[in-house]
Length: 119
Image (cartoon, rainbow, N blue to C red; front, side, top):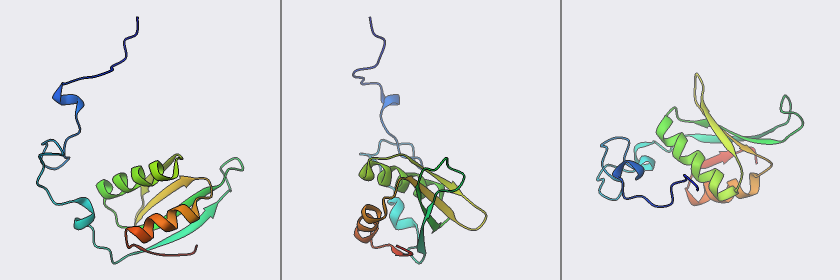
């Protein structure tokens, strides 16, 4: 016998809006991309030190908005098919994506009309 969840109609299992608490399909809040000012430039860099020889693509210079960073990180990880994380520093946010994914990330950021440098 397996105890894993296959299907559920329980509302707690559905995704809700972090602002109003309604289901995303019923939510009338403003989209996260609209709330973030796009007057920032993302800086690409590749890091290898302190990571056991593994390469990580670091995107630096995001605004310090946790909801925006979380949703963007999730989207980038899904589209690149790799793992990653985000962090909020003193001045700005940072997203780390595993591997050298500069070309894929460049296409995604072009589609979102975000400015970047260092590719």
